[in-house]
Length: 454
Ligand SMILES: *[C@@H]1O[C@H](CO)[C@@H](O)[C@H](O)[C@H]1NC(C)=O
Ligand SMILES: *[C@@H]1O[C@H](CO)[C@@H](O)[C@H](O)[C@H]1NC(C)=O
Ligand SMILES: *[C@@H]1O[C@H](CO)[C@@H](O)[C@H](O)[C@H]1NC(C)=O
Ligand SMILES: *[C@@H]1O[C@H](CO)[C@@H](O)[C@H](O)[C@H]1NC(C)=O
Ligand SMILES: *[C@@H]1O[C@H](CO)[C@@H](O)[C@H](O)[C@H]1NC(C)=O
Ligand SMILES: *[C@@H]1O[C@H](CO)[C@@H](O)[C@H](O)[C@H]1NC(C)=O
Ligand SMILES: *[C@@H]1O[C@H](CO)[C@@H](O)[C@H](O)[C@H]1NC(C)=O
Image 1 (cartoon, rainbow, N blue to C red):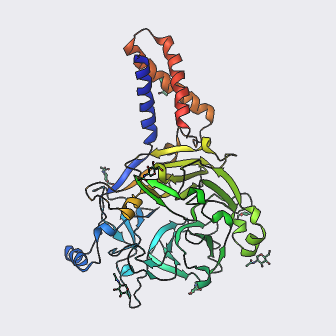
Image 2 (image 1 turned 90 degrees about the horizontal axis):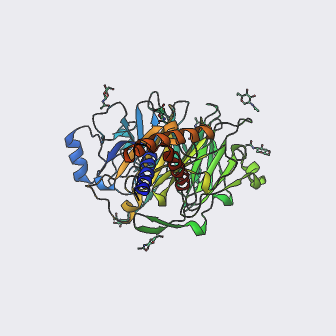
């Protein structure tokens, strides 16, 4: 009996250390903004320009000392939809959001439109540019929605000035379009390509920096899968038919094109295509079989955001129904349930992981925001609702199926660690049970492996 209890205890210790491979860097009950003066804040509240409960963080990105956070204008009362916090300022875990690049960029112009309307996700490229994918919609959860054409706004991160604004041509924007995610292929700073996913009407709008032109690519793999449209998050059941969502770009392959790993939100599957086929619309149309199905994550494993760490080649992705973040090594030949690694899973802290990035110092970042509760019910302002997690990539993936250390080393590490722990405990239970402990550790090891696979 004692043995079994210890065994369970060890499993829990092991699993809990394993589940917590990310640290919570910031957390908020509600978002607040760094207004110029307390009076300006009060005025914004009085006029309805700032309605605290209507603000929800959606996307994140890291550049130097800045952690960027987007706050889409789904509802009224969002004072700034693109913001940042200073990573160097460690005086609080719930910092106020500063508008980027300025308050002026978020004030409504004479045409009823601020410089930045409503971005969901953004990308800082390695050429010091911030690519802001502006969805263009104000108040899509309100009675009246104002729609502008979506655009990509590109800022110079060194000077915080606008470099370019590219408004999507009308024929590339459909009635149901919703642009939620952007991936940027920045292998060449002058010949950079941006890929913007349309979750509303399946498609990718590809933008060429060099040509200052865009085109729309469609493929049936961008469509939602009808058997994967049911979601259940924290007791809220809903049906979403979201199309292509997760976009993760690999480091350049030998031919200098990257691989785009992608999946619709309403899907259990992962797909891939070389960007060679995205860079030219007629080439894409003539080669529909260049788009590959990699495999399935298994039932209940719908995923929103994803990101490929170019250094380790690990694909990170959210699992929204499972309150988890998981990973897969892109060097794996197979994509299936058993070679997915579990990075973090928590039914309180990781409710609705909404964005994932790896910064240029090899740290993984994750944002969770409880969005379905916010959308279908109400968030409790006395609870922590939004969290930013981080950890070095190598720590995050250690002891998972994505660990880049050779497999035999992991097993040796495992056995040694377990041997040490079990012999310590065994010596407490029975000071002369050295031999029994090895056998014991093997049982633990085997049952851990079983528990680890999804
Ligand atoms: C906060 O940052 C300062 C300066 O970077 C550093 O000296 C200090 O140890 C940090 N405090 C915490 C709690 O991390
Ligand atoms: C929505 O728009 C209509 C027509 O412009 C207007 O009459 C109505 O007051 C608006 N409703 C709200 C809640 O703003
Ligand atoms: C790029 O194209 C857009 C719209 O087609 C235009 O407004 C803009 O001036 C162009 N920018 C450059 C740098 O050519
Ligand atoms: C929501 O879905 C879950 C799992 O799919 C199910 O167990 C639960 O009964 C559903 N709840 C409601 C209120 O329909
Ligand atoms: C890839 O790019 C590098 C650097 O620009 C170049 O030297 C090389 O020839 C390219 N390879 C191919 C296959 O085009
Ligand atoms: C796209 O590819 C086609 C066929 O290879 C070629 O004729 C066309 O010039 C290419 N278009 C562009 C914009 O590069
Ligand atoms: C196990 O203990 C030995 C000696 O006490 C130590 O050298 C070794 O590093 C430990 N292994 C692990 C994985 O903690």
